[in-house]
Image 1 (tube, one colour):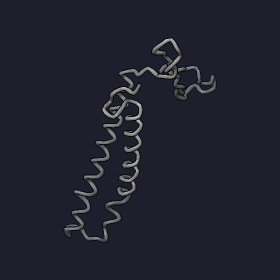
Image 2: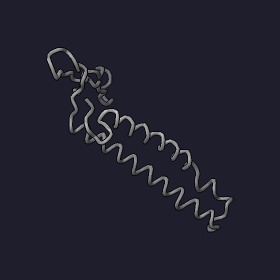
Image 3: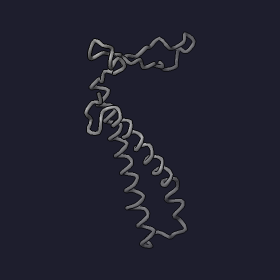
Image 4: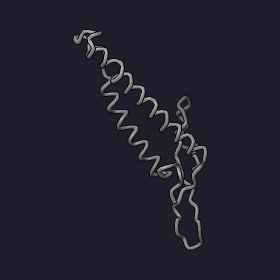
Length: 121
């Protein structure tokens, strides 16, 4: 991929640059097959894998917090049930969102790089 940094207008002095991602096209052979195959930059793959792994760690942490710490405190009577909503707040919604988000990240990564990080061809 290459980045086109010329997309910032002259009137946007203090705004961050906006980048357009432009795929590089390559060909494995001369008969125009695989013309749309995109080169995989190892740095980009590493960063994308880090994002997936970080999201997985975050999801597991949220899951542990809610299901192994907070809910058992209420279930075992250590905290009165009347405080359940205050203590859990939006954790169930966050957990649900990050579950779906992680699934999408993993699916996208596996689609791009293969199930075990092997490059798709």
